[in-house]
Length: 336
Image (cartoon, rainbow, N blue to C red; front, side, top):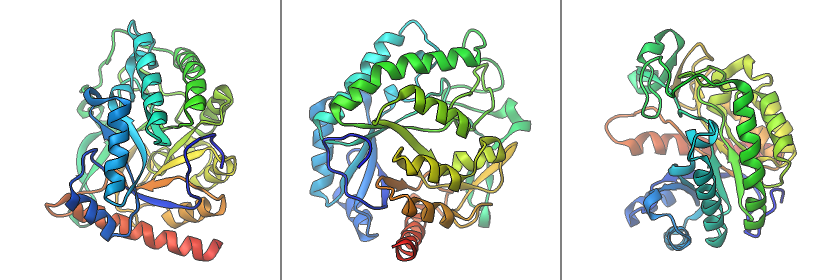
């Protein structure tokens, strides 16, 4: 297995559920009934400790589910790290503690995003059958919202350069990669969402293209730093990403550098996209599943940003997971 780890990871594709950190017996039964054996979660940062992380893994295991990944929102999309703000060193230390906690709890994976002001959206729009879905329209930036930010003005005191964002990633990853290697934990870096567009005075030069990822992986130069490949973000960027989804999977997946996949899609690429159901986008999502099977991918695939079906969030989750499981079976049967 690539991505050095002292934690055993079974080979093969793993369709997984995204769940809360303290699921009830009923919630875990719902996931098991769909044939899902893996999950990822995000915890309340106030509770972060090796004991709590381990308790999460044991709680999921008691419900018949393997906890593949755990995130801490306090060290995800961190402006202090991305922009080198005064509390940068404190946040980097907090991130290292998060990685060590994972290692001590035998949880093999976490997602990191190098965005200073988070995921941005414009008002929700309708997709198939009138389902409500996340959207982004470059012509409506004055209506855009990020994580705690609104409108098209600056989110911080000044505008930043691409060189600064690169430098801040280099210094960050140089500090945390050795910790991840020692802890045996994989770090998957999520693409910018939306990719390529400067937002709030902050450019997004790194995780918005194939070439950006390639350079970032060379800088990290670590068996424990790789991709959280969000297929949806890649499709948002379209041709501007430099390579398509399948070629990207073959390249980075062939190197064993993809650790988690966000399996979602959009109706068309930027400048205006609406997220839609996995069987309703402009790209055939089976092609991604097949490519992952071909490269021997051993991480998880989760549904993400599911359009709202009816008045119960479980409807969209069940529909999406069932569709993913069917594609997984087809890919495994065809690839062998």
